[in-house]
Image 1 (cartoon, rainbow, N blue to C red):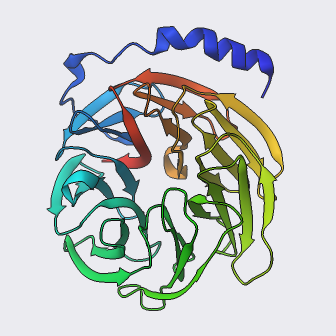
Image 2 (tube, rainbow, N blue to C red):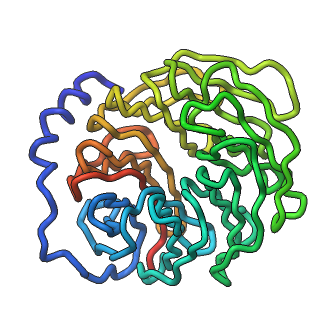
Length: 328
């Protein structure tokens, strides 16, 4: 990105960071594509219009909503790590459909692309937990040899999860029976791993970021030595839009844009602590965006698919995670 654009964004940021007014609490959405961000310290999820940045609704949840993930079928899963529960939201109505309890420390969620199933990592019990989203219940638990955290599904057939925040090992699960994942192997990455994300190319390539080094690795799932690239400060997180790759480096306050081969293309300035990153696209509404929340600043930043900052909004005291969904 043009350096002047960075400076312009930075100068404009203080104006954009004003907290949205209380009058927007409980407002109805009226439909459209929304960014959903967890308000970790205030027990709710914030819904923002991805075009205007207006807060549309604050969805009251159980305490400590940490991670959030949307499914292709209108479900949104929110993990409440300290209390061992997940909430299932209905994206169309922006309401809580159900609460699923009986977990130890639920961390992150990956969705099955073809079935109404969610895979929730439970670092406390060292499990990957399969949740039936329609029935709002746990249907299987797969034991893994470590505290599972970040997780990704490739082509509906394979699941990878990093066994820790700076993980010495990554577990691979087979999804031949998607309702009963099976642990097939564990391997050691070239550095302590943090995030694991399958590229949208049929599930052949996986990006692994570091919890301790300025590095990321590209794997072919069928074998071979990974390609390692230099990147920003750890921990990094990854999202995809076709051939575009977005790497969020929260300690640096940047979102990098890279090609599928790992080559750097550009970067955008975002608020410090913008660790997680997500992409969503809804062609029928001509809406797509990248979203990154700030754990430190309580902001939500929305970028265009090209990596330009559209807006920054301060919506809470601390925002751990965010996703994009279609509201009814």
